Image (cartoon, rainbow, N blue to C red; front, side, top):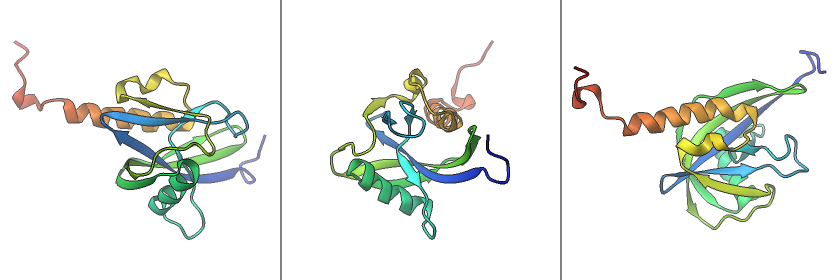
Length: 150
């Protein structure tokens, strides 16, 4: 087990890609770290690179698509046994290209309410919860517009 001093801390930008009410999930290949876990596509933020720039670069490299980066969600940090990762999530959309998998073994498009059905990497779970809440909040009428509880 890595000591606190030697533990790697990786900073990763991840894309919550939305299309027609669905969200893109990517399955890590068997040869990747955290094999066969679902994740949001993205990658390590390089020195001198911002998270939005990283996402645009990574989505071209990993999936062959150009994306538009929109709103940021709350970054999430997770401690795995041998490393720590901080994810910087952004809502995104594909603006050009068709997905071709260069690193992942599969993709899935699911509505936000069904994202929990996949076996996600642990670091993604708080991001999924925040995203689902934000989508649900957008669809819920304000209390003044609802009916009374009486």
